[in-house]
Length: 463
Image (cartoon, rainbow, N blue to C red; front, side, top):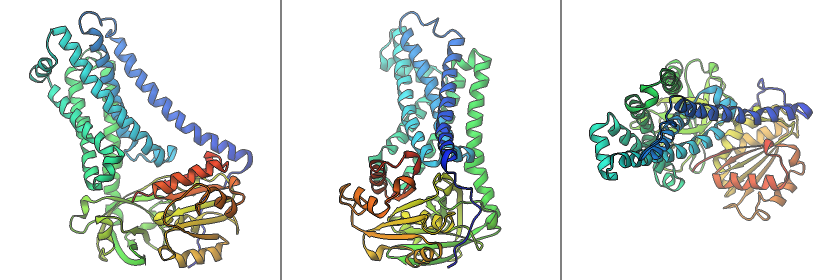
């Protein structure tokens, strides 16, 4: 196997590296400030047409709080949808990991704001009308336009929020979790209809109405383009099919796909696609898998470990099966590098994106080190390929065995072990990929070793 050289950016060092790190850190602040500024604008528009000044009399304060939390909840819902709309510049700007974390917390915030909106509006109107909470709720449903739709939207968002809790997500099939999250789009549409019907921002202020309509159009337009239009066009152009299935180890196979004009796919090693294999029932089963080799020779390759019903089926996928792919996504690439030397730390099937990176990262002999943690020697994946790459590119390879992550000081990837295996680790970029527990433990140990946060890059593989 011959290592390839790709056109990669020059690795920044010295003062330039510091400037690059500061620029990347500033990006999150730029986006955060933009999000907060638009949230404050929503409040300013509410104040503009006198809602606060009119907050007097029975229930007025509760009603005002309900209006504000409703506006902020609607805005947070749009932000959450936009964060995961797969907008390319946003992913490159922030990175997929950070977007996913922000989306999660914005989602929980949305649910709490809209629950507060419902509670305070009901309390405010009940006090003003001298009604019980139950009576006021029934009055809303019977006599206020589209309030019933708003209740349905809230129930849908509560369901989405419940399935996003870590404990619940571990118990759910991915297909169930994914289908539940699609109802968030229904909630957006129902919430927008509710705002159009009864929102004071729509009925009494043309400027506010135009601003809110623009927010909805931009958000749903981004979803339509990047989550629907672009994937459909991508697959119509490339027409991917399974070309080969090769066993790499116990319960692990590599699936190679071919198609048309694959040289036009600008996927960097370390990125992933969301794959659907169109065997019976496969269209509704989407799973993210990283490329395990650079795009080349008119082929894409992924490597899949058996870890459930769907991945078990992929162990026996037939040649010629049509494939629907969405991507490429993610920022776990060599564009993150700020140092000349790097150490790549893999746990189990987390070797897949690192295998692709090892082949293409610009480096002199001795600049790259791989620490590959597996349960037993028979679990090593890409043994021959990694050996060839080590010889051809001068990569230092360490295979480390152990059933589970142990104590920080005694584990094969513990602090003393990392210090001994890579004495200059503080001066290197560290790319970490594997199960969540391993990634969290290794990142914690890298911090103990004094590796700056800006030099730690990670991607978690869920099993």
